[in-house]
Image (spheres, rainbow, N blue to C red):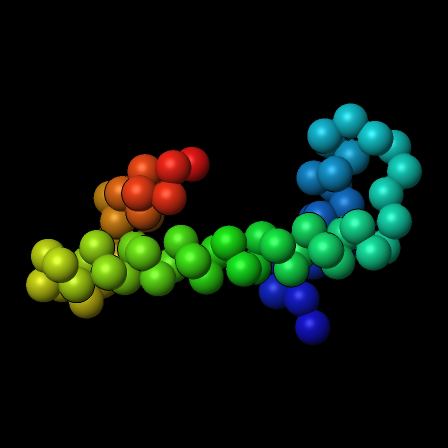
Length: 70
């Protein structure tokens, strides 16, 4: 079961510029974003642990994004 709704994935793909989107495309985007989110999360956790805190904050997400060159 995908973490992100297929309707949301379809909307994102439509906003990217195409009116027709297959269910498979929506499922694949969901899987890719979930994988990417996990990677971002691991990096954010690492950043928080480096500071000696348990709560992931906005700055950790931003630092993770910079680290992963987004």
